[in-house]
Image 1 (cartoon, one colour):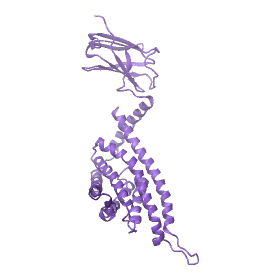
Image 2 (cartoon, rainbow, N blue to C red; image 1 turned 120 degrees about the horizontal axis):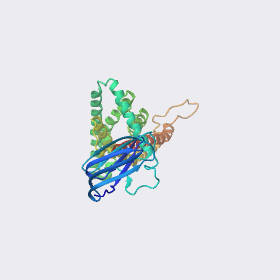
Image 3 (tube, helix red, strand yellow; image 1 turned 90 degrees about the horizontal axis):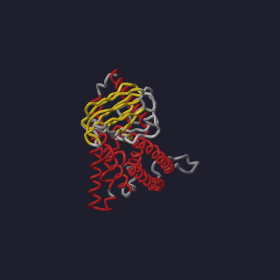
Image 4 (cartoon, rainbow, N blue to C red; image 1 turned 45 degrees about the vertical axis):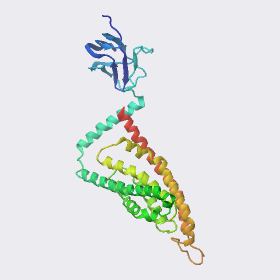
Length: 359
Protein backbone atom coordinates (compact mmCIF):
# COMPACT_ATOMS: atom_id res chain seq x y z
CA UNK A 1 0.00 0.00 0.00
CA UNK A 2 1.54 3.32 -1.03
CA UNK A 3 1.70 5.90 1.74
CA UNK A 4 -0.12 9.18 1.14
CA UNK A 5 0.23 12.62 2.71
CA UNK A 6 -2.59 13.75 5.03
CA UNK A 7 -3.85 17.28 5.62
CA UNK A 8 -1.99 18.81 8.58
CA UNK A 9 -2.98 21.97 10.47
CA UNK A 10 -0.72 23.81 12.91
CA UNK A 11 -0.71 26.51 15.56
CA UNK A 12 1.78 27.64 18.17
CA UNK A 13 2.26 29.18 21.57
CA UNK A 14 5.52 30.50 22.96
CA UNK A 15 6.46 27.11 24.36
CA UNK A 16 4.60 24.58 22.19
CA UNK A 17 3.67 23.52 18.67
CA UNK A 18 0.22 22.04 18.01
CA UNK A 19 -0.43 19.82 14.99
CA UNK A 20 -3.77 18.40 13.92
CA UNK A 21 -3.57 15.52 11.44
CA UNK A 22 -6.79 14.85 9.53
CA UNK A 23 -6.93 11.07 9.89
CA UNK A 24 -9.88 9.40 11.56
CA UNK A 25 -9.76 6.06 13.38
CA UNK A 26 -5.95 6.10 13.18
CA UNK A 27 -4.04 2.90 13.92
CA UNK A 28 -0.42 1.73 14.02
CA UNK A 29 0.82 5.22 14.72
CA UNK A 30 4.55 5.86 14.63
CA UNK A 31 5.35 9.44 15.66
CA UNK A 32 8.71 10.79 16.76
CA UNK A 33 11.31 13.55 16.46
CA UNK A 34 14.83 12.85 15.21
CA UNK A 35 17.38 15.58 14.49
CA UNK A 36 14.67 18.22 14.82
CA UNK A 37 12.50 16.50 12.19
CA UNK A 38 9.04 15.21 13.05
CA UNK A 39 8.19 11.87 11.40
CA UNK A 40 4.61 10.67 11.23
CA UNK A 41 3.31 7.38 9.92
CA UNK A 42 -0.06 5.70 10.50
CA UNK A 43 -3.12 4.07 9.00
CA UNK A 44 -6.65 5.45 8.93
CA UNK A 45 -9.30 7.30 6.96
CA UNK A 46 -7.93 10.48 5.43
CA UNK A 47 -8.60 12.74 2.45
CA UNK A 48 -8.19 9.80 0.08
CA UNK A 49 -10.03 7.15 2.03
CA UNK A 50 -8.51 4.34 4.08
CA UNK A 51 -4.79 4.32 3.47
CA UNK A 52 -1.40 4.53 5.06
CA UNK A 53 -0.39 8.16 5.58
CA UNK A 54 2.98 9.71 6.35
CA UNK A 55 4.77 13.05 6.38
CA UNK A 56 7.89 14.73 7.76
CA UNK A 57 8.45 18.30 9.00
CA UNK A 58 11.81 19.89 9.77
CA UNK A 59 11.13 22.55 12.37
CA UNK A 60 12.43 26.11 12.12
CA UNK A 61 14.14 25.98 15.53
CA UNK A 62 15.13 23.22 17.99
CA UNK A 63 12.38 21.25 19.72
CA UNK A 64 12.43 18.67 22.50
CA UNK A 65 12.43 15.02 21.37
CA UNK A 66 9.41 14.09 23.52
CA UNK A 67 6.17 14.08 21.53
CA UNK A 68 2.67 13.86 22.96
CA UNK A 69 -0.13 12.66 20.74
CA UNK A 70 -3.76 11.70 21.14
CA UNK A 71 -5.86 9.90 18.57
CA UNK A 72 -9.62 10.53 18.34
CA UNK A 73 -12.28 9.25 15.98
CA UNK A 74 -11.77 12.30 13.78
CA UNK A 75 -8.10 13.29 14.01
CA UNK A 76 -4.68 12.91 15.59
CA UNK A 77 -3.54 15.74 17.86
CA UNK A 78 0.21 16.18 18.32
CA UNK A 79 1.99 18.48 20.80
CA UNK A 80 5.70 19.25 20.48
CA UNK A 81 7.56 21.39 23.04
CA UNK A 82 10.02 24.06 21.89
CA UNK A 83 13.53 24.16 23.33
CA UNK A 84 13.13 27.89 23.96
CA UNK A 85 10.01 29.92 24.77
CA UNK A 86 10.12 32.12 21.67
CA UNK A 87 7.70 32.98 18.90
CA UNK A 88 8.42 31.49 15.46
CA UNK A 89 7.82 33.37 12.23
CA UNK A 90 6.95 30.08 10.53
CA UNK A 91 6.84 26.37 11.35
CA UNK A 92 9.35 24.79 9.00
CA UNK A 93 12.99 25.43 8.23
CA UNK A 94 12.27 25.65 4.52
CA UNK A 95 10.72 29.00 3.64
CA UNK A 96 8.25 27.50 1.18
CA UNK A 97 5.31 26.01 3.07
CA UNK A 98 4.49 22.36 2.26
CA UNK A 99 1.28 21.96 0.29
CA UNK A 100 -0.29 19.68 2.89
CA UNK A 101 0.29 22.18 5.74
CA UNK A 102 -2.15 24.96 6.73
CA UNK A 103 -2.89 27.12 9.81
CA UNK A 104 -5.23 25.69 12.43
CA UNK A 105 -7.56 28.66 12.80
CA UNK A 106 -9.45 26.95 15.62
CA UNK A 107 -6.35 27.38 17.80
CA UNK A 108 -4.55 30.19 15.99
CA UNK A 109 -3.41 33.23 17.94
CA UNK A 110 -1.22 36.19 17.04
CA UNK A 111 1.91 36.71 19.11
CA UNK A 112 0.33 39.50 21.17
CA UNK A 113 -2.78 37.41 21.83
CA UNK A 114 -0.61 34.43 22.81
CA UNK A 115 1.32 36.62 25.25
CA UNK A 116 -1.94 37.84 26.73
CA UNK A 117 -3.20 34.25 27.03
CA UNK A 118 0.07 33.29 28.76
CA UNK A 119 -0.26 36.18 31.21
CA UNK A 120 -3.85 35.21 31.95
CA UNK A 121 -2.80 31.63 32.68
CA UNK A 122 -0.04 32.88 34.99
CA UNK A 123 -2.45 35.26 36.71
CA UNK A 124 -4.98 32.45 37.11
CA UNK A 125 -2.34 30.16 38.60
CA UNK A 126 -1.19 32.95 40.94
CA UNK A 127 -4.79 33.73 41.87
CA UNK A 128 -5.49 30.09 42.70
CA UNK A 129 -2.27 29.96 44.71
CA UNK A 130 -3.16 33.11 46.61
CA UNK A 131 -6.75 32.00 47.18
CA UNK A 132 -5.51 28.70 48.56
CA UNK A 133 -3.41 30.61 51.12
CA UNK A 134 -5.84 33.42 51.88
CA UNK A 135 -8.67 32.74 54.26
CA UNK A 136 -12.04 32.72 52.56
CA UNK A 137 -14.44 35.52 53.46
CA UNK A 138 -17.00 33.99 55.85
CA UNK A 139 -19.47 36.74 54.99
CA UNK A 140 -19.25 36.32 51.20
CA UNK A 141 -22.68 34.69 50.96
CA UNK A 142 -24.22 37.42 53.11
CA UNK A 143 -22.63 40.15 50.98
CA UNK A 144 -23.86 38.56 47.74
CA UNK A 145 -27.32 38.16 49.24
CA UNK A 146 -27.42 41.84 50.20
CA UNK A 147 -26.26 42.94 46.74
CA UNK A 148 -28.77 40.63 45.07
CA UNK A 149 -31.65 42.06 47.12
CA UNK A 150 -30.50 45.63 46.51
CA UNK A 151 -30.38 45.12 42.74
CA UNK A 152 -33.72 43.29 42.83
CA UNK A 153 -35.43 46.18 44.63
CA UNK A 154 -33.95 48.72 42.20
CA UNK A 155 -34.95 46.57 39.22
CA UNK A 156 -38.55 46.35 40.47
CA UNK A 157 -38.66 50.09 41.15
CA UNK A 158 -37.34 51.14 37.75
CA UNK A 159 -39.46 48.49 36.00
CA UNK A 160 -42.57 49.98 37.62
CA UNK A 161 -41.51 53.44 36.43
CA UNK A 162 -40.77 52.24 32.89
CA UNK A 163 -43.99 50.22 32.51
CA UNK A 164 -46.14 52.95 34.07
CA UNK A 165 -44.74 55.64 31.78
CA UNK A 166 -44.98 53.40 28.69
CA UNK A 167 -48.62 52.51 29.35
CA UNK A 168 -49.56 56.13 30.04
CA UNK A 169 -47.78 57.20 26.85
CA UNK A 170 -49.82 54.75 24.76
CA UNK A 171 -53.11 55.70 26.46
CA UNK A 172 -52.72 59.47 26.88
CA UNK A 173 -50.15 60.27 24.19
CA UNK A 174 -48.40 63.62 24.63
CA UNK A 175 -50.70 64.54 27.52
CA UNK A 176 -48.72 62.10 29.67
CA UNK A 177 -45.67 64.38 29.32
CA UNK A 178 -47.13 67.06 31.56
CA UNK A 179 -47.99 65.11 34.74
CA UNK A 180 -45.08 62.64 34.78
CA UNK A 181 -43.58 64.16 37.92
CA UNK A 182 -46.76 63.93 39.98
CA UNK A 183 -47.31 60.31 38.89
CA UNK A 184 -43.75 58.95 39.08
CA UNK A 185 -41.83 61.18 41.51
CA UNK A 186 -42.44 59.19 44.72
CA UNK A 187 -40.99 55.96 43.30
CA UNK A 188 -38.16 57.86 41.59
CA UNK A 189 -37.33 59.56 44.90
CA UNK A 190 -37.13 56.16 46.56
CA UNK A 191 -34.94 54.60 43.84
CA UNK A 192 -32.54 57.54 43.66
CA UNK A 193 -32.17 57.81 47.43
CA UNK A 194 -31.46 54.08 47.54
CA UNK A 195 -28.93 54.52 44.72
CA UNK A 196 -26.61 56.26 47.20
CA UNK A 197 -25.68 52.69 48.15
CA UNK A 198 -23.85 52.51 44.81
CA UNK A 199 -21.37 55.03 46.20
CA UNK A 200 -21.15 53.36 49.61
CA UNK A 201 -20.73 49.79 48.29
CA UNK A 202 -17.41 50.34 46.47
CA UNK A 203 -16.22 52.67 49.24
CA UNK A 204 -16.51 49.86 51.84
CA UNK A 205 -15.28 47.16 49.46
CA UNK A 206 -18.55 45.34 48.75
CA UNK A 207 -17.99 45.72 44.98
CA UNK A 208 -14.79 46.20 42.97
CA UNK A 209 -15.76 49.30 41.01
CA UNK A 210 -14.55 52.87 41.22
CA UNK A 211 -16.17 55.24 43.70
CA UNK A 212 -15.86 58.36 41.53
CA UNK A 213 -17.89 57.21 38.46
CA UNK A 214 -20.72 56.06 40.75
CA UNK A 215 -20.55 59.30 42.74
CA UNK A 216 -20.77 61.43 39.58
CA UNK A 217 -23.78 59.55 38.25
CA UNK A 218 -25.75 59.22 41.49
CA UNK A 219 -25.13 62.76 42.75
CA UNK A 220 -25.79 64.21 39.29
CA UNK A 221 -29.16 62.48 39.03
CA UNK A 222 -30.13 63.45 42.58
CA UNK A 223 -29.26 67.08 41.85
CA UNK A 224 -31.61 67.05 38.86
CA UNK A 225 -34.35 65.21 40.75
CA UNK A 226 -34.33 67.08 44.07
CA UNK A 227 -33.04 70.55 43.13
CA UNK A 228 -34.21 71.15 39.55
CA UNK A 229 -37.50 69.20 39.61
CA UNK A 230 -38.28 68.87 43.31
CA UNK A 231 -37.78 72.49 44.36
CA UNK A 232 -39.42 74.18 41.33
CA UNK A 233 -43.13 73.58 40.78
CA UNK A 234 -42.89 75.33 37.40
CA UNK A 235 -40.46 72.60 36.22
CA UNK A 236 -42.63 69.69 37.35
CA UNK A 237 -45.15 70.13 34.51
CA UNK A 238 -42.60 70.37 31.71
CA UNK A 239 -42.19 67.55 29.13
CA UNK A 240 -38.45 67.34 29.87
CA UNK A 241 -39.31 65.49 33.10
CA UNK A 242 -40.81 62.68 31.04
CA UNK A 243 -37.71 62.29 28.88
CA UNK A 244 -35.29 62.38 31.82
CA UNK A 245 -37.24 59.78 33.82
CA UNK A 246 -37.84 57.55 30.78
CA UNK A 247 -34.16 57.51 29.75
CA UNK A 248 -33.03 56.80 33.31
CA UNK A 249 -35.43 53.89 33.72
CA UNK A 250 -34.64 52.39 30.29
CA UNK A 251 -30.96 52.11 31.19
CA UNK A 252 -31.61 50.68 34.64
CA UNK A 253 -34.04 47.91 33.67
CA UNK A 254 -31.10 46.24 31.90
CA UNK A 255 -28.33 47.18 34.33
CA UNK A 256 -29.83 45.90 37.57
CA UNK A 257 -30.87 42.40 36.38
CA UNK A 258 -27.35 41.98 34.97
CA UNK A 259 -25.93 42.71 38.43
CA UNK A 260 -28.48 40.34 40.00
CA UNK A 261 -27.29 37.46 37.81
CA UNK A 262 -23.66 38.37 38.55
CA UNK A 263 -24.39 37.92 42.27
CA UNK A 264 -25.37 34.30 41.63
CA UNK A 265 -22.54 33.66 39.12
CA UNK A 266 -24.92 33.39 36.19
CA UNK A 267 -24.75 35.01 32.77
CA UNK A 268 -27.40 35.58 30.12
CA UNK A 269 -25.53 36.56 26.96
CA UNK A 270 -28.29 38.77 25.51
CA UNK A 271 -28.63 40.66 28.79
CA UNK A 272 -24.84 41.09 29.00
CA UNK A 273 -24.76 42.53 25.49
CA UNK A 274 -27.66 44.89 26.26
CA UNK A 275 -26.12 46.02 29.55
CA UNK A 276 -22.82 46.94 27.86
CA UNK A 277 -24.34 48.35 24.65
CA UNK A 278 -27.67 50.08 25.23
CA UNK A 279 -26.10 52.84 27.36
CA UNK A 280 -24.01 54.02 24.38
CA UNK A 281 -26.92 55.97 22.83
CA UNK A 282 -29.05 56.35 25.98
CA UNK A 283 -26.48 57.73 28.42
CA UNK A 284 -25.56 60.81 26.31
CA UNK A 285 -29.28 61.36 25.56
CA UNK A 286 -29.99 61.26 29.28
CA UNK A 287 -27.28 63.84 29.99
CA UNK A 288 -28.63 65.99 27.15
CA UNK A 289 -32.14 65.82 28.63
CA UNK A 290 -30.73 66.75 32.05
CA UNK A 291 -28.91 69.73 30.46
CA UNK A 292 -32.16 70.89 28.86
CA UNK A 293 -33.82 70.73 32.29
CA UNK A 294 -31.03 72.82 33.83
CA UNK A 295 -31.24 75.42 31.03
CA UNK A 296 -35.04 75.66 31.41
CA UNK A 297 -34.71 76.12 35.18
CA UNK A 298 -32.23 79.03 35.02
CA UNK A 299 -34.79 81.82 34.29
CA UNK A 300 -37.10 80.40 36.97
CA UNK A 301 -34.35 80.53 39.59
CA UNK A 302 -33.50 84.08 38.46
CA UNK A 303 -37.13 85.16 38.78
CA UNK A 304 -37.90 83.50 42.11
CA UNK A 305 -34.45 84.15 43.67
CA UNK A 306 -34.74 80.65 45.11
CA UNK A 307 -31.44 79.34 46.56
CA UNK A 308 -29.77 82.65 45.69
CA UNK A 309 -27.14 83.90 48.14
CA UNK A 310 -27.89 87.41 49.50
CA UNK A 311 -24.94 89.78 49.57
CA UNK A 312 -24.49 92.99 51.66
CA UNK A 313 -26.83 95.86 50.73
CA UNK A 314 -23.88 98.01 49.81
CA UNK A 315 -23.22 95.71 46.86
CA UNK A 316 -26.83 95.97 45.77
CA UNK A 317 -27.52 92.47 44.42
CA UNK A 318 -27.51 88.80 45.40
CA UNK A 319 -25.54 85.91 43.98
CA UNK A 320 -28.07 84.12 41.78
CA UNK A 321 -28.23 80.33 41.87
CA UNK A 322 -28.24 80.43 38.07
CA UNK A 323 -24.47 81.08 38.13
CA UNK A 324 -24.02 77.78 39.94
CA UNK A 325 -26.25 76.08 37.37
CA UNK A 326 -24.15 77.43 34.52
CA UNK A 327 -21.03 76.04 36.20
CA UNK A 328 -22.91 72.77 36.76
CA UNK A 329 -23.61 72.50 33.02
CA UNK A 330 -19.88 72.55 32.35
CA UNK A 331 -19.24 69.95 35.08
CA UNK A 332 -22.10 67.83 33.72
CA UNK A 333 -20.45 67.36 30.34
CA UNK A 334 -17.07 66.82 32.00
CA UNK A 335 -18.71 64.06 34.05
CA UNK A 336 -20.20 62.65 30.83
CA UNK A 337 -16.71 62.39 29.37
CA UNK A 338 -15.28 60.71 32.51
CA UNK A 339 -18.14 58.21 32.85
CA UNK A 340 -18.28 57.51 29.10
CA UNK A 341 -14.58 56.69 29.08
CA UNK A 342 -14.96 54.49 32.17
CA UNK A 343 -17.94 52.60 30.71
CA UNK A 344 -16.20 52.07 27.36
CA UNK A 345 -13.20 50.59 29.16
CA UNK A 346 -15.54 48.25 31.05
CA UNK A 347 -17.25 47.22 27.82
CA UNK A 348 -13.99 46.63 25.93
CA UNK A 349 -12.52 44.65 28.85
CA UNK A 350 -15.68 42.55 29.18
CA UNK A 351 -15.99 41.54 25.54
CA UNK A 352 -12.23 41.07 25.09
CA UNK A 353 -12.24 38.63 28.02
CA UNK A 354 -15.25 36.76 26.60
CA UNK A 355 -13.57 36.53 23.17
CA UNK A 356 -10.37 35.09 24.65
CA UNK A 357 -12.36 32.55 26.70
CA UNK A 358 -14.25 31.51 23.56
CA UNK A 359 -10.97 30.94 21.73
